[in-house]
Every structure is written in C-alpha cells, then in structure tokens.
Image (cartoon, rainbow, N blue to C red; front, side, top):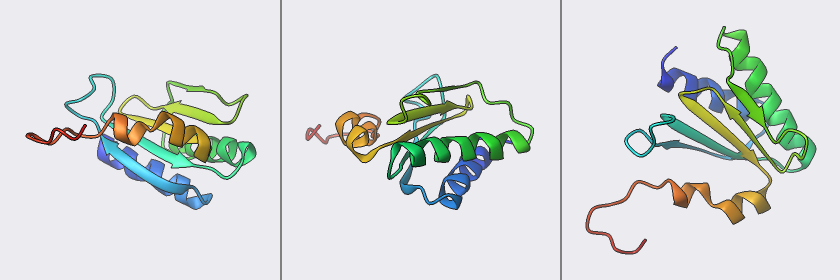
Length: 114
C-alpha cells in the first residue's frame, strides 16, 4: 500500500468513528520523516483514544504494522506512527495550542505573512 492509499485508509477510519475536522497535510519535501500528517479532533479523552485505536486496528487489518503509538494514557493528544503517514488525534484545545496545520503549511513563494 502506498502513502496515498494509507492516507485514505486512515482518514476513512477516522470518519468511521466520527472524527472531527480531519485534515491531511502533504509534508513531502518538508519532512524527511513522513509523507503525510493526518490531524483530527475528538470530543473527549475517550473519543480521542477511540479514534486512534480504530485507525490502529483498521490499518493493522490490512497487514501494515504500526511503528508506534504515543499519548494513549493521557488522551488529549495521541500520535499513531505508520511511517509514511503520522496520525495526530487531539482534543480541540491541544490542537489549537499546537496548531500543527500552521506549523506544517507549505510556504508560498513571495508570501511574507508567515
């Protein structure tokens, strides 16, 4: 499964359990670590954990072994690493504070508004 297909599987898995504000960031060329970052919000600590777990289970069903999961005990931000795709499931407050979408935005040449 290539990175695009994996990204689709991840976003579908998040949608399946009512993930909110799902955004897939193409960070190829910006990061040597991964191709895509998928960011999603959950409504509670339990929902965040459930979203991350569903992604883990659905991807593993397709024969892909996740590299790791971090933050599942706290539940305000859970990171699931699949190598080509890294998933960040966060409470809205954590998502707003860390603002990963802005951090990883693709710079527009000539735009000095950063």
